[in-house]
Image (cartoon, rainbow, N blue to C red; front, side, top):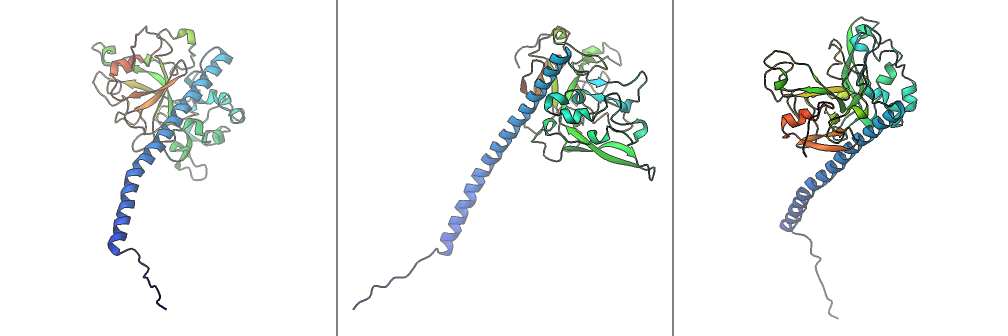
Length: 315
């Protein structure tokens, strides 16, 4: 009887290399699409975070008939390091009532001289996802944002405080404000006043074009912010890790033109994001939107104030 015989054939080396090359090409084509989809989801979540903060600010306004002060001074002659911020005041409206109840709003979140002996210290070190942009990957703590004195060694050390990528608008400055002088007062923003609250009816520039909160990331030289603290004189690094910021087209408080403090500018306190081309802002009416880093600086500065009767056209 004649038997049929056959040989089992497999991949040749060349065929195997071709298959591997095809798989590598497919991965190279698909990976950017996957990364873009993930970033789109993170960008959407960041925008939603701002919407929730906006809802919390409006719920606070509904309860107190005013928005919270951006920076809260304690006492008549407060230590600058004592200052709380607006982020503390909206905690109950972000489902953080238990954390808010642990905070003594009549006491500093940080005591003078950098001492860590403070009942509000545990709360200050709490990281909250509601204040963090998911594209700014990392821990919920803004490291090195608080210099304290070790009571055992009297040496200075740094400790982290709950991070915030969302900073209130203190206000703005523009070149024309100087009028030939060397200094200029800040144009006031909604969340920039000291112990002074702004009501919705005060926003004569229009709630749909007035900014309240914007992004700042923590990568590279950028310092981000913290949700609990307000401002300081800088001796404890809290000025850069505050809950408020400003936008200007000048170099510091001078009549020198500069783009350092515009969106994604090189200054470590410029509003910025890990999203390409600009960053998200929260408007006074509660909606959030993405603003390009290429926006006209005068238009952006007009959007940072609320009661100067400035007309802003569509962005």
